[in-house]
Length: 375
Image 1 (cartoon, rainbow, N blue to C red):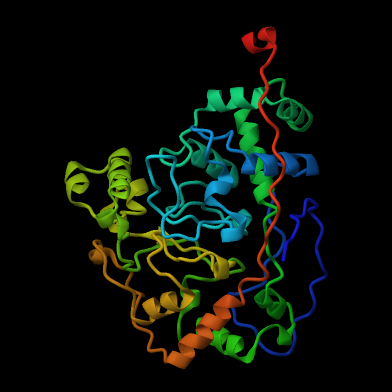
Image 2: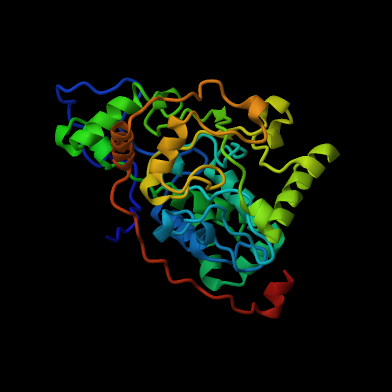
């Protein structure tokens, strides 16, 4: 089913019904309206510009990597492969996270290196293995598109397209890619029939025996904290020479010691940001929303299905290179096969129908008059 992204905002979709008599677990709730930052207010014109820029490769170093290259609508607004894409000659080093409901995050990327969608868009466009774009070059490209010059003038008052405003527009568009009508949301808003019996049992396990709510809590089902689960390293670093080169580049670029550079064979995660040994192998808790469509799972895509994820936790996680830092709460759960089936059924209730759209028609660059280009 195809859905057109809403460009209206600030209005409640429906009045929230009263909760039914059946008790709902503490710490979980339905998802409300996405927060809008005061310094980047929404407008239909800004959102329309952001949608075009999201799908336009003009904001990438090699003119071939739009945001949508790694956030494909028909692949969960992510990439249904263990590791995301890089520009030609490289690959990425982590799994691509969906942008669905990313408007609600306070921390973006697997190690929380961006605090806003605006900053995330800029980091992605300039990233060494995905965007590799230079601000002045990308601004010049935008200026060579008459439609963009007109839109930037109308939306931001720019005489010449400002690259920071491009990221503002993309962020505004991404804030419209939300899903608040999942079976789980309907259930939490009082509709007892929204979940099947198996999903209700799974919800009870999720908030009880399986202890999932110790990290996956709140309306986004994440505490946005960092944990080492023992996820095994990405297999491609041993089998794919391009992936290995990219991984070594990341170790070097992010300030590893020489010893780490020569010996590390796993993603240090949060350590790249903090340089604290206790943070090696830790990653931010992802939301569980829309996960029906965002396989494979974990920061390196090493778990293929939701059932694999549940079995991984049931076994008490795994063992990786940073075993000394493994989070202590990750212990065997003792779930039966039937209980794991119920838990998977509940996880599927956190996704509604797939959000699919038609990509917008994109304008083309045209030569500027010589006098304009000189300015």
